[in-house]
Image 1 (cartoon, rainbow, N blue to C red):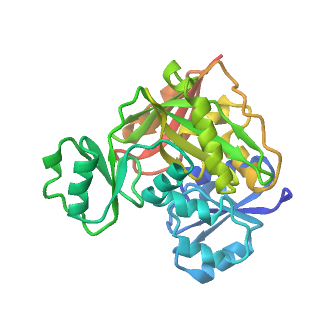
Image 2 (cartoon, rainbow, N blue to C red):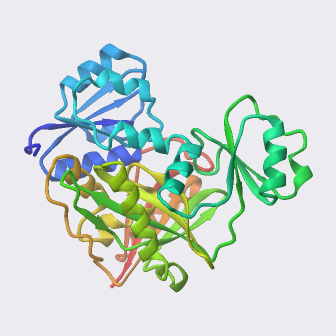
Length: 351
């Protein structure tokens, strides 16, 4: 167990790191942020900030020496950078990152465990894409295998010839057949160092332009009828990776049962509602897990919970939203409110 007063290192300096640092402080820990950016909203609420590039081995080693345990708020941390952490304790493991950073590896890993996914094929050449359109058909989605989030790095192909002339740019990609679903929902779990697992109630999620707009708990009937099967698969994945910390798994509710979409080896936007909406938030349980503490109770703290992202100019409504006592407003301290940029969120509780 990591005793209170010790320092938790967090790789990445965005809003997830900010909320992890706040949860760490609640439990008596210090937070040390490592991020290349000069402006870090996570560093604003932390005790230390190392600003250095991911390939700076000396800076990473010095950062690791200052930390009792290290975690990350961003799943695209370069694997090579983690070698600079030496013998430091890192949770979740490098293996979890290796699986989740590559969409093809992720789909293969889940399929090997018996999970149901969309039909998919690796795409390295234009000929591969032609073959995928013959085998899988259209409509479908062409995605970069690495990076890309909030709808970035994805192209919908509605009919076969719409793919003609697409420039792949030499980067590995994956083509997925379109899944027809009733709704999208997430399964979020925390797994401790002793293998103990807790789940939060699943949220039904609505995306707009590829970005999460709202998460509602309890989910509707279509999702609730498939949560048990989705949880079973999520637990299989976590156990197979010997996972420690919070992980999120996104599913489609379909006539054939839950279809796995993707996983995030970290705290997740669709779990922000847990800060006020559950007895123990995803952020606190992540800190508990990586520090070897018992996991907290995840029971709902209200009859209904709705989390809405404040994206771009929507953050201007924060003062009016805060005037309603049922709302809990979180602003992340970001400067420019660009279109598509998550500036904060509001969680509304119905008791």
